Image (cartoon, rainbow, N blue to C red; front, side):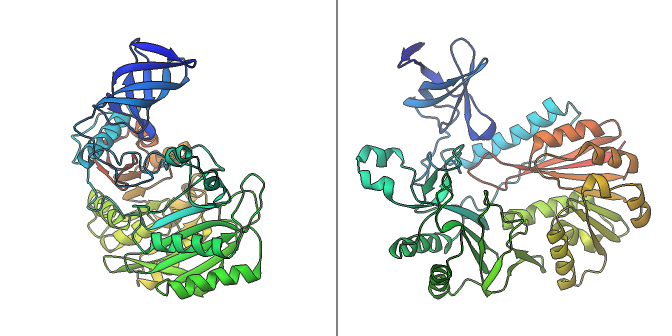
Length: 471
């Protein structure tokens, strides 16, 4: 039943039915409307207070639990619910895998409307915590207060600065993070020490609305080799305070192999158009996979779960089924990791990527790894990947494509169909746009293998690998 309280509807004894998009769960109101609810698990029975009403659905929050799902677990993180980063931390890992696999299947079936083979089992992650190799934190001069802090009525808390994560859908609000379970130590130690030192030395934290303050962002990158990169983003130059902080970091954490900084006074935090300065060590860290070494600089894209990236690439290589005689095209190659990973099984690999710095990294990595059968080219895929390019570099036998979340441009899809390679291995971080692209290729290609890979435990995100073979 439903009742009204302070102009908002409360639905009582609602059973949570399913896990939905973006990590929220799904229930049904008595009259059939969908209700999207965060921080609950399918099987929970709750009272829901609606927060927003749309034509066909509500957004709400659970205000009372009548019974708990058998698939619920106690979250480890003290910041769960406020942070928004690990929305499924209250769900058993086996159920997380189930819903991720279900999402992939539903997207491919409902959006793609294509014939599908039997799905291979989703590949879970051996590490369910402390698996990320890259974390980015924001500084703020006014911290976001969680429910416990608000109830304490301690007015001084709101004046304390924060170093942590943006509150979901609030670009100017930062939740102070004490311990995060996503990146291995010394990540937490580095972040907490920097915050404490900055406060003790009266360094100003950034105010995103007023665009003032010294300290803007902190990035920590780690590698399986044990190397660590730390990059501080300052809003303005203050040589004395900048050097004071960087010298403290260097002295306190001698295991850091790359200490860098940037002065960024523009409107956003993105680094790609910034001049990054090396303060100590090298301007990159080294990642290793099957004896191959890959340099990762501050701007490099690299899969953020190193262990699962290895598993993802092994599945990609298996789906490609190379015999040593094939010409392989690796589209959206990034720093050339997949290209080099599969190169020993191919005659030649051609990598294409739009970011010049990534291609510079790819060439440097190929040289470091003594790989001579990989070539890398810069350009927008829909422009570079054309008839002249094919004529120059040869007809591909296998195409590997790993596009961004938006999927492939329709011109790229058209060119794939025109080329007609025997196999296409499509790696995707968004099975919805992948399904759209598969539908466009369905007349010419049949999906013969599908396997999802969990790169991000405790979240709703999932990667998917599809093998298409020419009909």
